[in-house]
Image 1 (tube, helix red, strand yellow):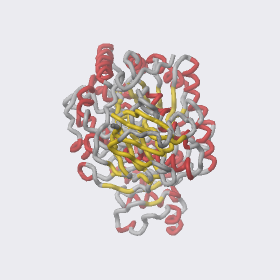
Image 2 (cartoon, one colour):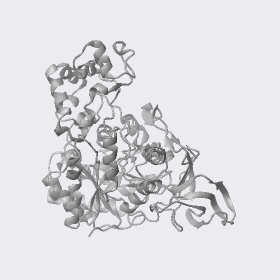
Image 3 (tube, helix red, strand yellow):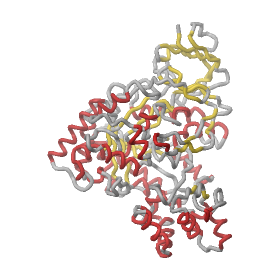
Image 4 (cartoon, one colour):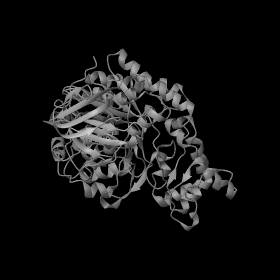
Length: 577
């Protein structure tokens, strides 16, 4: 007897091949039959008439930070209700294992600062009962609703070996060997690879550079080499060149990392700017250089514009504007005094709208920011209004002055919604060209991070809605392929990413006439009561993970059949030369 029989569906199998109609049979977690409609006669415990609906593989999100959230939310909301069945965490050098017994508080405060995870949720919602990476994976085993794999974070690894000196100095030969050993143990236990932070922007909860920034290139390459010794592994990193294109040092380093490991390296995040279309060439030059020496480097790029709020009170993308760091990282009282200074304001505006701002320049349209929540009598009635309109009423010549006056009145708590200057034909045409490049992969949601700022986990349904009823930059078949088989193949996931007989039944059933994302809302369901951004899905009829229904009509069923994805067992080795 079958567990599930899905009849009359339109199959979009993930390979990019044309859609076709078929019946699908599922038993013991795998697809056991794909046959012409009406010919699947075997009885089933559950039958779904999917006439008019689409079946496709479960979506694979290569860049998340669900490492902590899965302990208080084993369903990985909201990604799960948007059809994501496999998530990869531990990116950007920020894993939560391995960890020394006395370092859990340091890791929590670093994640709260860099990744916007509420400290109260990290303290109350995560058991912190492990030391090794294997123990961390074991703590999740058997209790999650999605498939989840994790990278070893270079910052966590350095802290584990070098302690509180990890942020400020290179490793000794003995310490490097200890790091290689700890990395090897983690990969042997099932870590999917190594993630790195080679940028200059991230600081920890103390305001110091994150530990990964203490490494030199010799250390980075040695750890890449160690990663390549283990089957089914990969590399991931963030780099300064993500902002404005790679310099000569990075054009040498990234390909060398891939070659030393004989593994693919993905970096996050490629952001398009139609005002500087040549920047794409500066970004993709690193992929070309890698191919020339036998490596493989790919870029992640988001296929949708993710609404994101900002604040002058909490760490966010504004902190990464050139010259803004010393202001935005200072204590609140000092920050306010600095923001009162007219010369400081003029500097901030000029540098935010300069070439050096790179991809963050898109945030420099301060006049078009919309005021969100406010917290003072002085700002009563401003919510929902554009800064430029308020400035005109007040007679302010410079809208940025209006903006700063508003946030100071709220003691910097004002919620701000930046405009989307890249939501025009020029930017979307540039994106469409970019999506056809074999060195570009759609993804980079950051789901599980910046919880009160953004909701990137809904990008899958938004892309499908746009492909079917919006701009239609991609065919349905190509959009599904980009969300499923492409990331699955880059990660080497075994038997996942396609609707194919014998493969694991990670599947999504959706209504193509309604598939979409609902407007984002604020939920207050985190441990400690902290807020998070959330968006419901529209048109998701079923999500199956390993043949078990985890989402029915857009709502979680409570089932937890997810697999902790382990390298070598659940992934195969993807060599690049």
